[in-house]
View 1 (tube, one colour):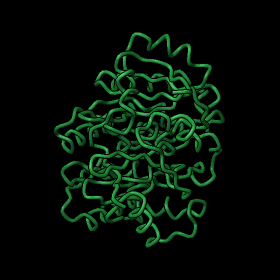
View 2 (cartoon, helix red, strand yellow; view 1 turned 180 degrees about the horizontal axis):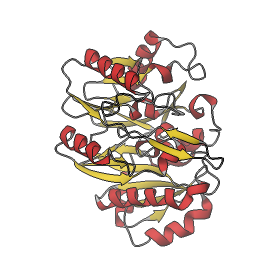
View 3 (cartoon, one colour; view 1 turned 60 degrees about the vertical axis):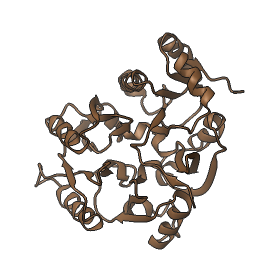
View 4 (spheres, one colour; view 1 turned 30 degrees about the vertical axis):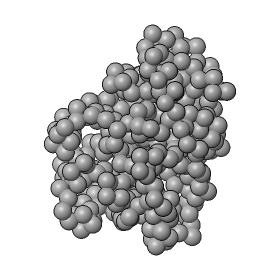
Length: 356
């Protein structure tokens, strides 16, 4: 396949978000969760990016009121189960300057959750905005399970890909061939180690290891917590990364401990990761958790991405639902959408007409 999945640091024109509403799992912390979304929207639009905001019909009026005097927000009436759009939003490939959006089937992270509405989002609401027709594949793959560099080297994890409720007949060779055919991956590395406790995604790579522009790798380490239950697995993952990418500089992130106390008094370890950051043009929106490790994590990112502005975003609320900043976003590279949609949004926010 001539088309190749683009790394996140290419020029981006838009960001997809699915706005939390009262019928999602955010209901307990709805306003706190929405505050995180509004912070992200502010950063993206201030940088002249456009936000494609999937929105429940009951929230349209309030969002129109909030953003009517601000350019850059396209409010899209939509139905969805979950707000983790990273895993069901379309991916963008490129060949000779032509951008192509594709989607895989999404089944709620191995049939853990209902995804009947999520799996229709691209075709029902986003495809009319695309410059080229959407391509759909029936195989089950989530966007958060994929990380690629400029050389077409794709990174993922065994715990996720080999899950029995995803593509049970696929082995390593099958995935190598499949990712080459669908994503233009020239090589695929599937990590055997690395996992965060209580991670519903079965070890998505975007919580564990991310490429940098200069062939480095930022990864969620645990060197600051050598007695933590995650230390061995994350250390073994780092060793795998060094073998697979012998010329890469590894940038270990500190490991936070974030717990949530349930109503019954039981405390649950949350899968908080500093690796779950978003690259959007010259910015990196970096998750922090009001934890002692926040400052050190930001310093790691500054060193790994010296030409980017690192912007901390408090994601302590997001991780209560076992995800973070990268999980709720999907970037859209320059040239993917119809130019008229972008031009109109940059003149002023608007509600998308289903007929457009």
